[in-house]
Structures are given as structure tokens and as C-alpha cells.
Image (cartoon, rainbow, N blue to C red):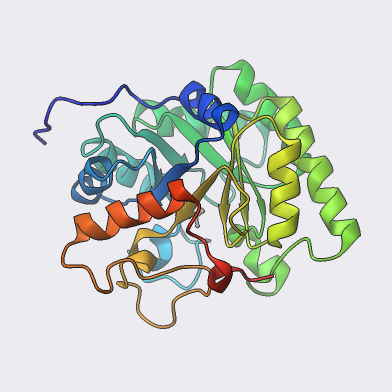
Length: 272
Ligand code: KIV
């Protein structure tokens, strides 16, 4: 796919760390194909996430559980063709990191065959050894805490996490353990805004939030949700940025501006 020569330097995990230190927020959105990735890139999104949400919004599945490593490699590869300078993050799918060896194998395939720059896995302190070994092997990692959609059958639904003080304290300890193990970035999903703000303060690595209030270092949304494409009800924490705008590009640019200025998420998009 033809691309204009890049006008910004490639975004790396070091760039994101510097942005956190400077108090500069960054924008993350999901993409599942080259054209979408090029759109996000042109709008100034810093991190393009090939989320396993593709299971739901692209494949029409009920959860992310059926998404396979082959699916993730395929979508990461085609997204990579549309990306220029954005950091390309790919989800490790369900049960693709149950042991250290399997995690390194799956991440290596996402990086070598898909072109991912960083991989994201869902879990808490029990993944510290895995993250440590991945890190030692040169694999950048984003640790996804809070609501873990791959565990939906175990959790009994998509529920806000970390409401009670004990659970909040445990999440804080686990996030710090994953940072200590070598995670480069953390992401929290569906947790109280006040807990997310505490985590942002405590962590030295950047914290990306979804349904976690405005206190995080960055925000992520499923692009189909913020463009009003997802059928059915939009999650409360999301916002339709296309509404009232005349192009996809204008919608994504508005999202980037709103994240960077701290205007999104507003009080209407807080879940707890
Ligand atoms: O799969 C995905 O799109 C994600 C985001 C919702 C954070 O993990």
C-alpha cells in the first residue's frame, strides 16, 4: 500500500514514556485493516491497537474468546501495511500465553509475521514471570488490567472491576508487580475513575484507559464504537465522534484533540 513519507518520527515505547513524564496525553484507537490504520495514522493517533475486539466487531462473535493467534497475525499484518509512524500494538488472543514458552512463541509470531511493535496481554500479578521473560527476550509488553474480556465466562459478564477497596489495592499491587517485571505500558478497562487516577500517579509507565475516567495518561476506544458503526447499544464510556461531522477523518481528528486536551472522557462517559 502506498504511503506518503512520514512527517513525524516513529512512535516508540520510549516516546510514550517521555510523553507521560511531560504530562502530554496520547490517543489510541483500534484498527483491523490497512485503510483504517492509514486513516488513524493521518489523524495523528499515536498507538494503533489491533484488538481482539475484532472477534466481535469484525467477525460477529459474541465474545473475544474464539479469536485465534492466526486471526491476530493476519489482522496485524494488514494493519501494519496502513501504518507509518504509529506504534503498532497487537493483542495476544485467549489462551495464547498460558506458559512462558507459549507467550514468547505467540508474541514472536505477532512481531515477526504481523509486524507488531508491542503486544498486549490480559491479566494480573500471575503474569509477572511471563512479562519478565518476554521483556528479557526483547518483547515490549502492555499489561491489560481491570475488566479482562477474555475471562468473561469466568467473570460471569462484563462488570466494573476494582470497586471495593480490597480489590482496588490488589489491582494497584498487581500493576506495580507487572511494571517491576518489565511491562512498558499498562491499560485498564472499566474501573472507577478515582482508582485509575491513583494508578496513573503510582506507575512510572504510561497508563491507557478505557471506561476508566480522564485521569489516565492516554485513552483508547474501539474505533467502530466511536464512529457509530457497532450495531446495538454503544458502551456508556464511548462517544460517537462522527455524529455532527462530515468525514471519518474529521471524527478521528476530533477524538485525538479531545483526548489530548483532556476533554474526553467527560463526566457522561464515566462508569463508576
Ligand atoms: O480488544 C480491544 O479492542 C481492546 C480494547 C478494548 C482495549 O483490548
